[in-house]
Amino acid sequence: PGVWRHVTYQKMDKWGMVPANGLIVVENGHAALVDTPWTTEQTAVLLDWAEKELKARVEIAVVGHSHVDCLGGLSEVHKRGIRSIGLDRTRDLALKGGVEAPKETFAGSTRFAVGGLELELFHPGAGHTADNIVTWIPAKQVLFGGCFVKSADARSLGNTDESDLAAWPASLARLRDRFPGAQKIVPGHGDPGGWELVENTLRLLAASAE
Image 1 (spheres, rainbow, N blue to C red):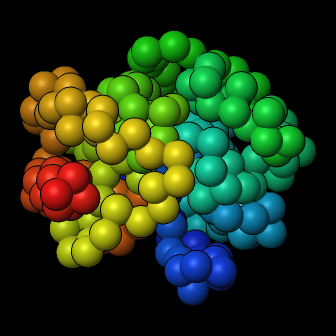
Image 2 (cartoon, rainbow, N blue to C red):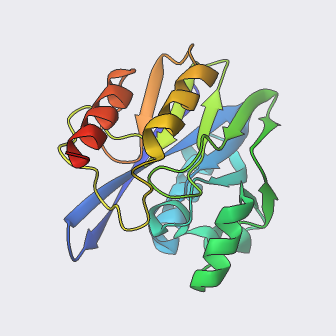
């Protein structure tokens, strides 16, 4: 309750139509957006929907890493005066890439509250990208792994152009050590589940190293 998954689609030359996940976390009429949709247009629809249907205004947007499926709608977020936050490395990479960047940054981990509900942002180490972070909602036992965690039925690691395949397993171990109480894990693409998502990610990494 109070945690919504949003799914938006974008056509990618290599992959076809690709769905991407994010969250809207609502508490006492206040909301946080975890990863924007792919585009400003999709983000505008989503923010309007949250205000109308959830009776909650998004106050802060979390950027999971510097790819378009996490920050493609940031200009719409900023146009509406909504705060944005991401890892310091994410801001650097976004600016270097010439795209809209999160305005607030942190290094390692940070916490903030929305409507009295605490969220924790954590950088477990390199994996899908050097800057991938996860979002933990302790009161809900929900962990948003983003593209750092593959779905349980994923058959490939997806886009690995900026991945650190050697570091990824140790980064997943740090994730497990920090959030052992996670009951629901949401990947960047595909269906939510439990720790079987992490196990599948490790299997895919092992296969890629053979």
